[in-house]
Image (cartoon, rainbow, N blue to C red; front, side):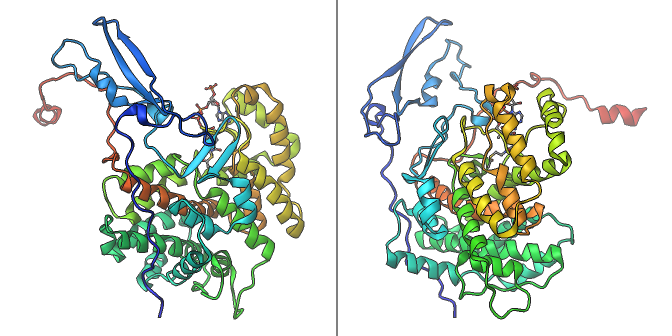
Length: 469
Ligand code: ACO
């Protein structure tokens, strides 16, 4: 019988942010010791001549402080900050992932991504992201056991997947199946119960590869392969994807390790679009399956996780190295769309994950031979890194630029690439979801707006006018 439940518990709720802003640490660098700050932003409102002193802590001001800045008009509810797409707004305080976009630094809980990619396992990183510390051997073994024995999905989930058309996009299947898990585990709605939270987290980490592999087999018209709990996490996933009549599937160790590293590289990336979606939806206190499915939906988009798929489609369209300069010109003129796999909201230098992925590609190509499109990718990168359009906008390859070539070399179909990203991102979404829930400062996410529609006007039905004609 599979063992249900787990002894693992989330880290104790952190004490909340200091209420007095000047008691909070300044955010000078992730390495520096907390520095008490007593600085303030002095604001003069030239509408009223009034002065305001807004405390600065951790290089931020609290936007609610701006509410105090108001005119004498009784209808004035105070100043808003306007920041479409959160270009300069911190939506939370988080202890999970640190990025310095200018220096190309990425750390999970303080550990450099390069060291984790080289030495850690994906489940070790999943534990680290959630609990803040690396697991002891005992904790790790228990965690691996719990994950391994929750990989099976209810048979009705299998039937649900079989209901999709043969050409369904696997991200659409993954997204709806993860949302569907909510119907199988109604007690998961008790999100404030640590035991329920824990088992939901275990289930999501364990079942996502199973659902992903089932969606792959469904599209291919192949029989579903059930989890083989003798295998480690990544090998088990590869077995469910590729096993045919073998009694035990043996994955190519280079592929298995490459996939494990790619999962680690994708495991978290602080407040990106999909994580923000998970936090925002989770802030309504919905169950974790529903909240995480919002993250999968966001990841599907071509400007986010869907970019890895688009990179390969773009390379296919370019077709040959000799067409690269013309394609680059079309991107610059705006006619050819964007150079997919380039640019990042946060990284304004080389994405550290892209560096690791590029080296990883070499390892995989040693096994399967050089991908036919690698030449095109290298030429795109070479030209883009020396062209003023890209240099002046600080557009560098992001993690998605080379991942697609690796996935294709491992025989994954193009529309499956983002599913692989989703498996990797799952621990980050879950850690961020739980951090949000335990953060006493968080409330239901509800941004403000600046209303620009019509002023009040009387209702005059146009339908009535039509009827009387
Ligand atoms: N190709 C060509 N031009 C680009 C690109 C690109 N890939 N990315 C940005 N630009 C240009 C924009 O046209 C804009 O130019 P302008 O100032 O002349 O108008 C300027 O660079 C700034 O672009 P923004 O859209 O303002 O940058 P933003 O931070 O909002 O977007 C994003 C970041 C979405 C990643 C963008 O760079 C992009 O679309 N890249 C391609 C898609 C991609 O690879 N996404 C994966 C990101 S990584 C991830 O999610 C895992």
